[in-house]
Amino acid sequence: MRDRNTNGSEESGQTFGAPLDLNLLRTFLTVYRTGSFTAAARLLGLSQPTVTTQIRTLERQLGRELFERRARGVTPAPYADELAARILQPLDALAMVAGAAGGAEDAPAEPVHLAGPAELLSRCVLPGLAPLVDKGVRLRITPGLTEPLLEDLRAGRHDLVIATFRPRGRTLTAVPLNDEEFVLVASPAWAQRLGAPASVAAALHGVPLVAYADDLPIVRRYWRHVFGRRLVRQPAVTMPDLNAVKAAVAGGTGFTVLPRYLCVEELRSGTLVLVHDPDDPPINTSFLVQRPGTSGNPHVALVRDHLLQAARDW
Image (cartoon, rainbow, N blue to C red; front, top):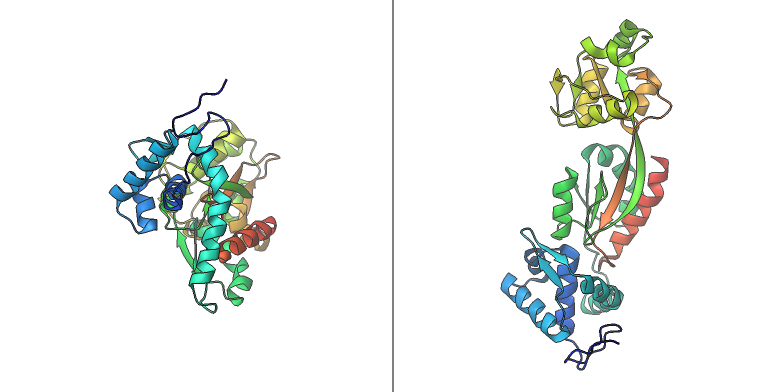
């Protein structure tokens, strides 16, 4: 038997004794998408106390807790997922109608804010977006590391983020974009000195290592996956720019591990040489991430769909 709340709702199949304020639902959906009262207030042009008051008012009307307060932001309570699923499409559609009616017909769409790893953006993403720019799409590109970019996405500073891992939680939606293969490379001179050793890992022990960072995130992953062992050594050179790492190795400074997309031309020309070619190279999947629902900017969907199609050829 289902329990009926005093406001006319039922435990299953929620009904309301009185219509809910659309402004409260809009605030709820913004908090749900951003995972933060502060970020929602910024997007809505309200003060944080106003957002907090509106959410508490909606919770009293529904007789349900919608968010669990955390040290950093909020987490949707189970009922919040149900409510968001019911109102997301209608409110987004209403926002698009209101936006179309309220603005000039010839007003350009807002820029699409896209963020991701600098190397992937410069090598694959930006060249592929040229046809959209020719059609009038405006872009604002931000390079960076995945974790802070996802925080900015939750706060409404980006529309789309290319992430190197799938984000946790339910405040963002992610779809696989592409798989990048990692390759172990060196200059032709170093490859010739190594020859064809019985153990590549052992042969590289005395060769200078060029890496993205001191903790060797890419190289260590390659060692664990391919050689089944932990890499314990210090890099000779570090540079938080994979293009610079590639340039250093191509110039004769030791060896490194790179995404294949970043060095395919160098491998083809012989500027870089594969030191090892395993049957099962390490693969990392990148994800295209955005806040749930439909953006009020139609160009966001255009860029998203174009990227998903273009990534098949990266």
